[in-house]
Length: 373
Image (tube, rainbow, N blue to C red):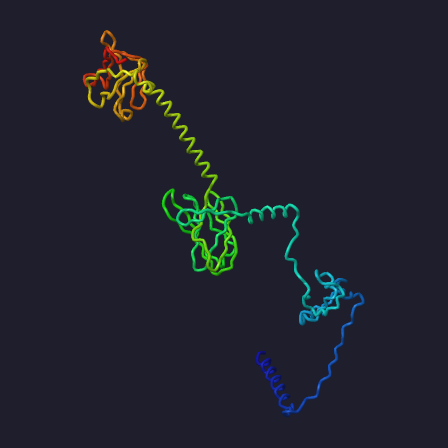
């Protein structure tokens, strides 16, 4: 069965090869006859819908004109737009070619209401007010702070410095109106509370006029800077009338307070010093060491004063006992002010005791029987 199928296949292949061999070959460069082909369109259904039309807005838009304008902007017609441009009169007869008209001026200013005008007037009156500087030490030109607008005159190839108050510190970078043609740099001299901040100014050319703001931990400085070809201010500084006045009042109050305290101290300590003829210095001191023994004992007829050596208030002080007729010591009213015992009575005999027991130091104070006066 397999042999029969193979024979049939071989017969079919041989037949095909024979047919190909009998077909005449087309000679080269000979055109072949065209074959006519006709496309038969398929029948359209009656129910097929028509394509949607664009919206009316897009139908009115001139896409061709816009494309032409992009290719050549000089073809733009601005006759309609010229009526809305400020500064261009309609129908002026000027030739419009798509460019900005020569008469067009963009707005460069805005109107000010009465409040703004009054504020500008007040500020201008402060800026133009006449401020007379004063001469200071070491060639300084002194401006009174807050009295007006300080003017600093500088010159190219020269250095101008602005000195602030001693102990005042700059809190931020100074702001200048013309940072291109002015060089501004900080400096400082002195140490501690006397350290002084300095601003160094150098203009690059004459004829400049700008302003400068300096902020510190105490105040803000607003200055005008001017550059001249030759004239300049080497050192500028400030006086502070309000601070100086407050400092003078503070010093006066401190001096007044110290005077009152001194008067009170004198009244409590030595009221008898005013009437020295009534003082009694007839006291005898014996015993004890120099640290415990008083340097002076006296009374004014009412109170007794025992003056110890300086520094007694920083050490352990002895106790004062008044010795009675029985020879025993007893407590009495007294107080210690700085280095002086003030006893609110007179006594014939007293004792200063430092420590306890056998090691205690004792100083005997005896009032003589014939006081002066």
